[in-house]
Image (cartoon, rainbow, N blue to C red; front, side, top):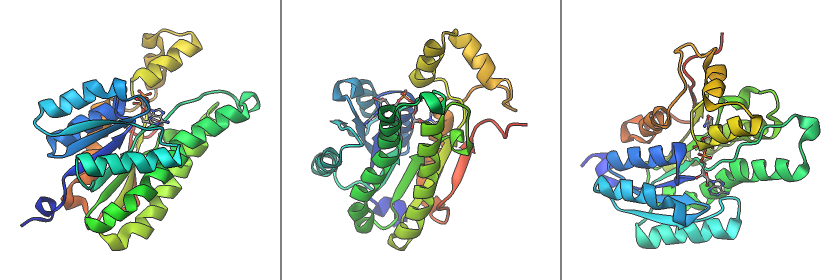
Length: 255
Ligand SMILES: NC(=O)c1ccc[n+]([C@@H]2O[C@H](COP(=O)([O-])OP(=O)(O)OC[C@H]3O[C@@H](n4cnc5c(N)ncnc54)[C@H](O)[C@@H]3O)[C@@H](O)[C@H]2O)c1
């Protein structure tokens, strides 16, 4: 029997109601996983849940604020009782915030750090017992090229750089369980998150995309499926010797 056949095929994807998380959920379903769709608003998860079920896998929507410690514990308990023990966790839930540092209020700073970084920590910690139970488990964290530094993104950039440190540390701590922990760092991907940013800045989506992709070597913006492709690679049972890595999905380095 192959390692993958022995594993429980249950994956958790946070922030999967839409955008990159929804694409990851769909891709993992195509890869043979039942998928727990976690998001802050359960009602908004129905599209992703239907898509997973449409591809022949089981799926549930679970409402959770990933930055809320008791809520994270309850969400994991629901996944276990309704889908079974998870072997895969994708920490994708995130909020974006762009403002120069001197205009960044402490509430905004806290919210960005809480959802993007504390959320990934809480979810990963709650996942650890299941990694133990299912040697060969996987955690994939969604970072960002912003981790390298970006004008007007001190909170977001710090949170995503924190994700990189968390990824490398968990890879060391969870390695003896046979689990891998990796990160995907997307560049510009057109989603509701980036559309909302264009609106906030008062520019058309077309102009925003043109500006964001001007220096991208492959000459286009990323798609949620581009990110899901790399998550699928990290989750694959044959990728078990790849851990603690950050893979940039950004159409090439900036020149
Ligand atoms: N779009 C991009 O260009 C881009 C680039 C790099 C990294 N990312 C990262 O990719 C991930 C997904 O981004 P997206 O563009 O699909 O964003 P999105 O805003 O379209 O989706 C994010 C999802 O997270 C959910 N969410 C927000 N706060 C939550 C919370 N506290 N608990 C649970 N769920 C919560 C939202 O409801 C939403 O469904 C994020 O971590 C983001 O930082 C995006």
